[in-house]
Structures are given as C-alpha cells and as structure tokens.
Image 1 (tube, rainbow, N blue to C red):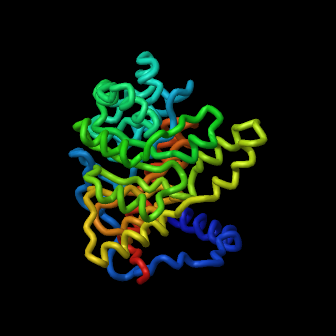
Image 2: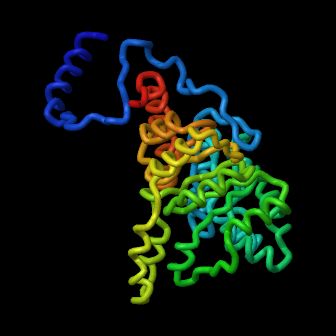
Length: 335
C-alpha cells in the first residue's frame, strides 16, 4: 500500500469513527478471531444438494412473484443470479399456467438457471380443486412444462380466508398433501407463507418423506396482512388481528431441537428456514443451530435489487455470500 492510500484510509477512519459506534453485540455468537485465517473460498460449507441437484451456497430464493406484468423479467434475473452463485429457486404461484398456458413464459426460466434446483409452486387450494375434478395430473404436466425439479405446495388458509377473492378449503391440507404424494411422482416442498407452523402441524409435516419443509415463519412478509390491507370491506379490515398469529423460525427450531433430543427422527430430507431472515447472520444462525441438512431462504431481500437491475441483484448476492463465508470461519454459536 502506498503512502497516499494509507493517508486516505486513516483520514476515512477519523471521519467515520463517530458514526461507527456499535451499542450492542450480537448475542447469538462467539467471535473467535485467532483460530484461522481468512476464508480461502466463498463456499466453505462443502457439498449441498436438493432434489438431486448441487448447490454451492445454502441459500434459497423463496417464491415471490407470478402472474404479474413484471414477473418474467424478475424471474429471469433471479434465475440468472441462482445460476451464477449456485443457489436454488422457488417460483411464485404457477396457478396462472394452469388457467392460461400462454403465461408459461413468465415462469420458464430453466434456460437461465442452468443446473440449479428449480421448483414450481401451487397452493394447497388449487391442488384440492384438481383432486376434486379428477385432474391432479395437470400439476405434473405443469411442472414438466416448466422443466422444474418438483413442486412447492404453499399452505395458506389464513391468507385465503382474509383475501376477498380467496379460495375455501373443504378438507384438511394434510389430507390433500398425502393424496398428492400418493399420486404424483416428484419431489415436494411444503411451506407456509408468513405465519409458520404450530408444533402439531410442523411435526406432522416433518414425518412425511418430503424433499423439504419450508418454515415460512412469522416475522417476514405476511401475506395474510397483505390481503387484509388490500381489502376495502370493513368486515375484512376487522380480520387484521389474525395477521399477528404465528410462529417464528426460532420457536419452530426449538421444537425440532427438543424432539430430536428425545430420539425423534424426521422423514423430511431438509429444512428450509424462511421468515424474518434479514441477512446472512440470521441464515447462518439457523444453519448452525438445527440438525440435518438446512438451507435458509429469503424473498423480499432478493426482490428489491431484482427490481432495480441484474447488476444490483448480483452485487447483493456477492456481498451476502462473502458475509456468510466470513461467519462460517469466525463465528460459533453460544450454547
């Protein structure tokens, strides 16, 4: 480093010192700075896979957009980022493809995502309708048409109940899931959309041979609240308190830890922790804390840079992965 750059750096330190005060330490971690050097790779966590496809980073792009004018460009950018950085991706609700096959182009991103995991997405209400109509095979046709590796089933009874145009469930989602698993030969991921799962629901899902259970927990984007906010009807406005019902990722993780300590063994292959994940440290916390194969997922964090440009999205991904590698090297969970 030359003298001019050293001088500039020291001047920056003086100017920024007062703005860089940190009143609280992150109490989740021990920081151990003398055991190892800097990471030699941005991927120190070893081999990862989902549905038979490899991932370089334990980071999942959560389902977020579908059937909207910007969906095609957003999905293309997300898929390109997934390919570049070795991530997995869930598409937003693919219901439009069932209704109008011409919308398939909004979701057809296999050519952009390459060999990374890609999952289509339908709500449990749509699957119930297909079962009742004797047309469940249409879900398989949709997944194949999108060249996806499997199907995400989102469980959202509160959202549907509050939504002015919402569907009504006529049977337990667990029964629908079991029927789908019996009839469709493909990997399935099951997720909530902002409320998470209570202990009975979570345990029942974890005891199914799913590809993954995605928490979709309380603390992130809350679709029940979004629907209540959309509604102009006073009776729907009155349902807003239901948006406060739910379970955080940490609470759900506590249940899983308690069950496994008692010798319980889940059948679901992986856990995807989503809901309230603000950054790589939140993701790292859950990855290190939970047993088995664990990914963490975000939605809105990807959406903001994806709306801006591919360059902004790639820069966001690069910084988060760099931070995750640093955390893996220097941070240990407090007991």
